Length: 207
Image: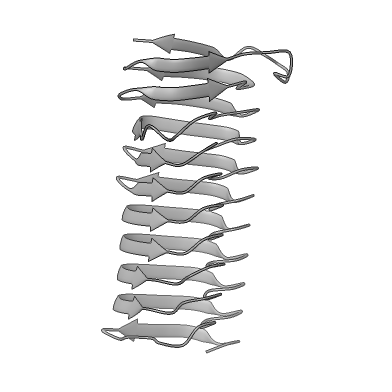
C-alpha cells in the first residue's frame, strides 16, 4: 500500500514487510505486524491504537504527525528523522531510535535500546523507563519528567541541553552542555571534563 491517502485498517494481521510508503492519513487499530521491516516510510498523519509490530528495523523513517497509544515494537533504527510524534503507553525495543527526530513527546512508556534520540530536537519524556547505553546524547531541547533508568543506562546526556527530573538511581552522566538535572536517587558517576561543550552551565543535583 504505497502512494495512497486515507487508509483505515482494523483487526488485521499484516505479514508483508515494507507496508505504507508515501501515504497521508493512516489509521490502524487492533492490528499485528509480525514482519514489519521498513514499514511506514515517508508517511504523514498516522494514528495507531493497540498495535504490535515485530521484526521492524527502519520503522517510521521520515514520517510526520504520528499519534500512537497502547503499542509494542521490536525493531531497531526506528523513528529516524520523524517529526511531531506523540506516544502513550508503549514498549519500544529499538536501538538507535529517534535519531534526528524533532518534536517528540512520549508518556508512560518503556524505551529499551542504546543511543536513544541522538541528534534529536525537542524531545520530551514523561514518566518513562529507559534502558541502554549512552542514551539521549547530542539532543537540543531535552525534557524528562519523573523518568527512571535501568543500571545499564550509562554515559547519558553528552552535549545535550536538558531539563530533567529523574526518579531513582543513575549509573553515569557525561558532559551535558546546559540545563538542570535533578536526580532523586544516587549518581554513580558524574563526568565533567575538558570536552564539555559551551555553555558548560548544566547543574546536576541530588535531591
